[in-house]
Length: 268
Image (cartoon, rainbow, N blue to C red; front, side, top):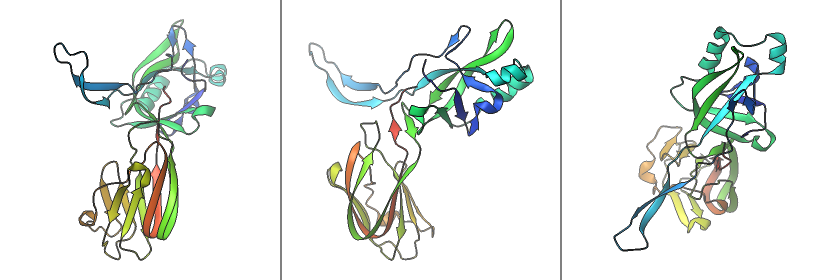
């Protein structure tokens, strides 16, 4: 089976609230073997009579998918028995039909910090003896990875500071965090990642009174409390983290906070 835990939490609601728990198998419905979706698709040409390809690079394109099987808990079974259709529609409304991705957590010791950004479809009732005792469904994630819960790394800088930030990402590509800078009278800020080939992100001549600066490095969205347009002061080399230790040189006057939801290759 994929998971050893019995409880799951979807969109902030525990399965226990519906009297449901995870099972490895109910009748002929069973969880799949643990799967990973971090395969790379290569873009290449293979000319006639050439034994090696011309490779232009690769891309991780598949999303993680896995099957869940869940059904009535022992407490629920002893008190209320199987599910009727009215209860089944409440469960279906909780799990399916959303128009965006939601968070799924499996309550299990070795997944205590992991959650999946996903949607649920192919929900089917599992019948035993003509009675509804459980469900099976397909979980489709927005990437090949699960994500660690958000973690903040804060550094109080007055002039210059060298710090080491460890990225727990499983992905071999750089990870882009969310950065906030709480100004303390300074107008020039920079982040040099020595580990990333001395890549330097700079903000120069920020107007005083801009307030706390926020950069979503993944989407390239740069904002501040005052609503000013800060892009003219930016060099657009947004900070990123390589897998493992990153030696960062922070300059300026303020509090730097990196918020990270590291992608992790834990399968499903």
